[in-house]
Length: 56
Image (cartoon, rainbow, N blue to C red; front, side):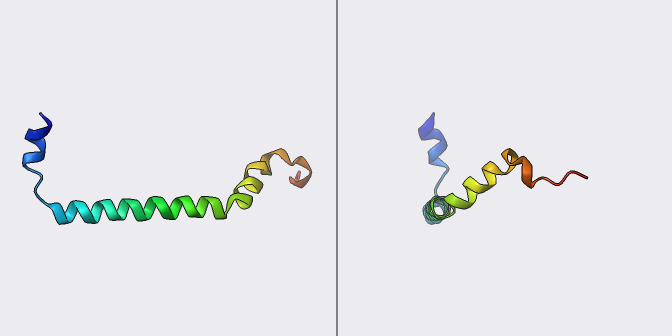
């Protein structure tokens, strides 16, 4: 069944471009998450700080 599906998938350059795009996106998101770890931690703690919430 898999060979039947792959028989019609002949666009090798397109699959290489798609794989490279996926790898670049994955590496970019991974690096961004490690570099902005402090910012993400501060945002995660925001709902827990009641003294910073203004009560109107």
